[in-house]
Length: 245
Image (tube, rainbow, N blue to C red; front, side, top):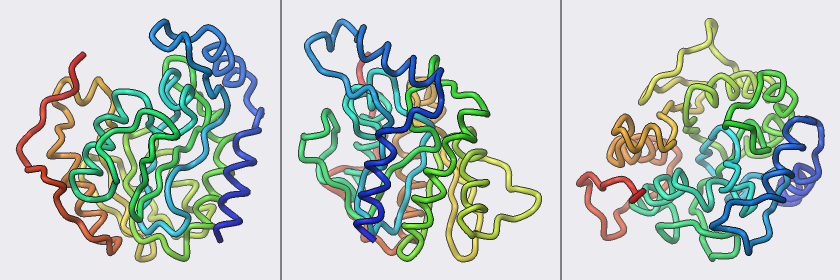
């Protein structure tokens, strides 16, 4: 199974199926943000991150232009990742509370992170066609994870709409009509717990639409269903302020 996911991750990094996304991700990697001018950007599709026998899967949206498109690792190097990895660390599912680079030593415990679109899209908005073109990568990832997968958290409505067809293609029975996205919702897919959670975007975290406590609550519920031990890492459930702007 490890060989299967490892080979899949490698193939993903060479995909050039969507011309608009290829042009954008490579343009961003060339021009860079001033704060990262001395860094070499990844500038390619971003594979999943986490153990190949994960029992909990987190599904996002797409790599951020100056986050994962720069670092080459899901939710690494941007504000959304700061919130997500802090929450995972707080409940004992990550080895450290921050994610700054692909070689920072961060490991995940029983959790894998992926997305339905693997390239950074302009304005963080992939088209429906790009979403559908990218779907086979997620379908294959789900098929390879199926022996150990017990729960999934989908971040945001776009991810939810993209994930449900992928689960159906990977062999899970998706209810009809398809369940609507909502924060904290749970849907059963053949014994797999599918949870909805607001995306960890700055728009949601800075405005308080998604608080650290709300995020931890969903992650705890899903982790418990996945059979993962959940414990505090010296953190309390008091609300943490969002990262400084």
